[in-house]
Length: 420
Image (cartoon, rainbow, N blue to C red; front, side):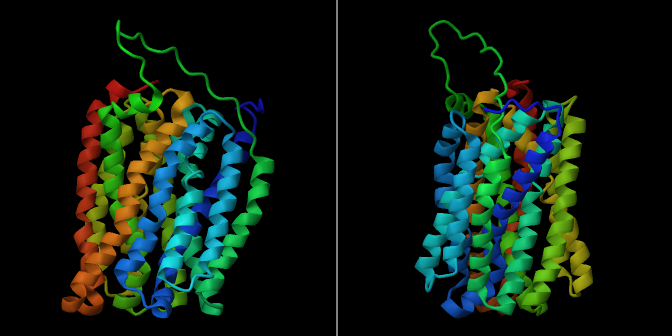
């Protein structure tokens, strides 16, 4: 096991490689959104079926396997687990390009979810061991750059490759690139010493000692944080998946134009939002841990009216500016909320805590989000035609209010559950 000190520049190298891996994670996860139009046309799918492939097919095993894999990561090499996960999800992404029907593509997307189940929670734990607590929100926010960068590259490369060749070539190209990255990842990222856990709190006479998962699940703030993040993710994942189709149907944009437009919007807005959340979390949370949750609550309440105005835009440049703002606000939560989850357990249990959080967040947010907007679009199509997706997006924005309320409630009890 490496004894690389935090004070050296190596942690930043590790963080950079983790960001690249997370970029591929979201590239492979989100590429389906920009390819939905060509896939729907060739395979004859409905919006509901596309939503199931973008959400439930991925989320089933991604969430179900995340907790046991993270428990293994708390005891075994996190770097080896992530290396295998990267190769596995990338391989299944390439196989998506060979699918000839709904069920084949559905099963391949399930395989992507199986691989990605080992890609995130171990990374959170690695970052927490490589960076001191006063820098963790920013480090975790920097790691989360992989979300907007990967989403943007998935939109950009997916659209451009599909336009130049076809949608199958797009899946194969990005999948093969991820498989090639796996051995490079293993060579660079070393397993750090795990941060020592604080002494256990005194246990009342006769009371059984609580395990990591059991202790975590007994904390009300964990459930409020997880459900709050899940509510926001229903809207976040759902809107992100369906925006390419919205711009095609409501604004008449071609595949290449959609790729360039949405890719740049996702990259610029997402990176600014993720970093702003990390900086605000570290600055405000240092004196008051509740700020880690109040910052995203405010961001979601600001994002809601911005999305309403953006969906009503009739011209591309007005739409770009109006969508850019909520795209950033939608990702402010990542650094602060993930940091708060890390402090609900002892250091030796962080991978498992992250996986429990991701289980709730992704099972509801990712599993329901893309399907919800597609299903509502199908229901409204007889009445609104090609504009049905616009009204489906309107209907889902209320999840931001639910999320803000849950984060405020969690902030009130966070001090009680906090482990310094």
